[in-house]
Image 1: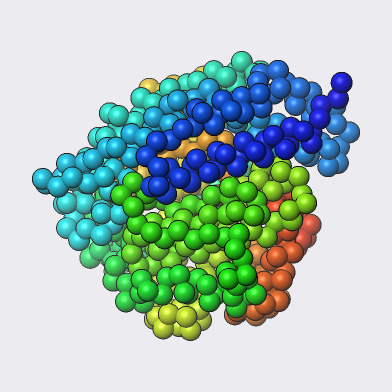
Image 2: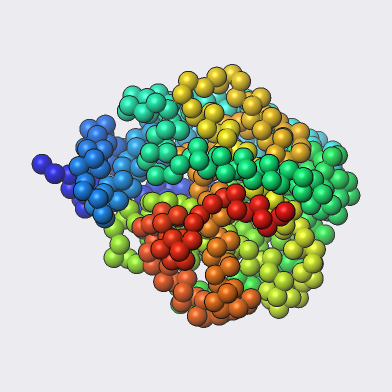
Amino acid sequence: MSFDLDHYSRHAEAFVGDLDREYHLHFSGQKRDFELEEVYERHASLFDRDEVERLREGVDAADGGEGRRRAEYLLEFAVGGYLGRASAAEEAAVAEREAEIELEVGGEKIPYRTAPVVQANEPDRERRAEIERRRLEALEQQLNPLHLTVLRRSHELVADLGWPSYADACAELSGIDLRGLAEQTAEFLAATEGVYPPVVSSQVEAVLGFGLEEARRSDLVRFFRAPGLDAGFPDERLVPAFAETVAAMGLALEDQPNIRLDTEQRPTKSPRAYCAPVRVPDEVYLVVPRVGGREDFAALFHEGGHAQHYANVDPALPAEYRYFGDNSVTESFAFLLEHITTDPAWLSDRLGADPEPVVSLDRAVLLFFLRRYAAKIGYELELHGADPDLDAMPAEYARRMGGATGIGWDSASWLADVDSGFYVAGYLRAWALETRWRRHLRKSFGEGWHGSPEAGDWLRGVWRQGQRLRADELLTETLGEELRFDALAAEFV
């Protein structure tokens, strides 16, 4: 009997809705417990080993076209769910412990999750270092054993499913040439090696008062925070600036009740902004914790890019095109809207801010992250390769991150810094794709494209497709161009 893709797709959508709702309630700080296991058990039949194998057979039997594409996306989802269900208890325990842990710093108790926010707003350099030291101690002692259990189990399960390694499984399932991408990132690192120190060090000194050679990892959150720019990014303009910008593109929030904005501060709220697409396109949550200044604007616009993408997807598409597929696509639109917050005209017109220091800082921060993630994919390929030496991985992580950033890097986050399914590849491809979208929008609608309803119409047309096409396919079909990460080096050299 042939596999019923439609039935599986509908069930998958119900699971994702339940999972994202649970994720949202916990990480927005509205719910202490993280009932991940219960969600998986309600939908356990999706991730039965036999079901996964039937999907694999369905992919192999498909003649091509949309049937094969749908089966591939559902298979990737099914394998991810198969691994996720096996590690749900540990994943839930990590989340709940993060919400419970308090760090003792100089007689003050700081919630683990808000520690990066406190650290970013701490002017005293030694206190920043102490906050980070305590946070990394908690990570190493209380969370890393759980992370390691998840890693080992995932490696064992993909081997049991017949793949040589977790990396091979992810490459096949995603359709992304991970090793080819790593070669491109290595070329990017080599091409930007000489320009990186002067570009970044000058901005580190402008923000912190000392150069890159003196900076420690604990200083980075303060550098990204850049409190000297706060006057140009007033808190009371955060939501209005976003609302005005998307309205100028014909995407007024008052006409989009499916986008639900949450900027409220809560003690256990995740320090990472996120978008929770609970029901695409009908119920999309946009959640932003407050750090202060430019980072809040960048975070809101980034997650707002996700929200606009999901909220404008054609509801008639099957679930696998609305939720799954290549996340490089949705990340590219998140980066696109985030980049608006560094546009000189936008800064002057919307915020009355001096563009020059913002643009200079953004260039340095972007180069920092591009190099860090370029190094990270190589590390993850080694971590998730066939029979990795896990004892050597913490030192390897610290070596690669330190080499790419020019800053001494602690090894404690060698597991916590790794997202499942090689999401690192999604970010890398998204950065490359965003530059093509931005170039096209400027050429077609002018430098002030973000104030053009016609640009909004064009974006809506692309967004309606959801993630039916992978990033490289979408770029070729839309603009007739090739997606390459190493081409980003031209923006810095």
